[in-house]
Length: 290
Image 1: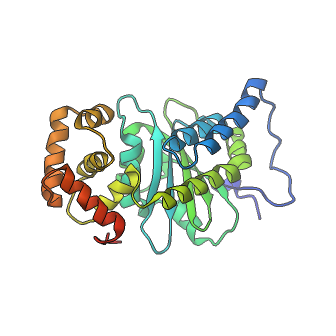
Image 2 (image 1 turned 135 degrees about the vertical axis):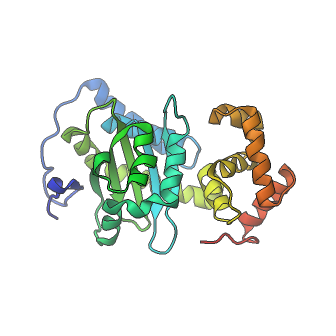
């Protein structure tokens, strides 16, 4: 396959060919950190530690600050698998922006949509500058709100199609050729781990984690806001209101208000009723609209 570097797309692992350029030497400590982080990543497959370990692997390879991973299908809605990263003054940005993308803004992501229609069989690494995004709502919600200036994506054609993204803010320089080369060299292992983690989650049962629950609750067409769905999902997963307030950096009163609104829209009176609703969703007794 031809190298498409000039258009922002870098083909991965061309069989029988040399890499586009030699990777510069790295220090011994950095060399050791790569296998160590992959060992940690593989050991976390199927656990709630996996998203953080995946971010760590992306950081070691390309110094990303945030990450997100999505599943795409021609016949089903875009699904957020997980999002990770620390934003000191905007702590829930990775999760909420990624949910916004999965609900709406994926339609404006022409780069990934084009890859999805391309019929390619091999993974590919692509870059996107925030300034190149034409849709102002998408650019604002998923980039500018957290000062993100650039995204690097690993497109895994599957099936299923998986897309892993790493992001940098204005506090960091643009991704270098070395960063991209490292991601190219390790894309297969990264995405195989993601796919195995996805399979492990599917075998554990439906809606077993917060992203799945939030997306399923919002699909019920009860007009839940994203925050109301987040609070409900956290309650289903066993968190107390105090724990939710601390993790989401909300006041206790705000959590109570969102919970009450969500309960009213869902037609439940208490946590026990909410768990009954969850069981109906999980068993298919209450169908979730596509």
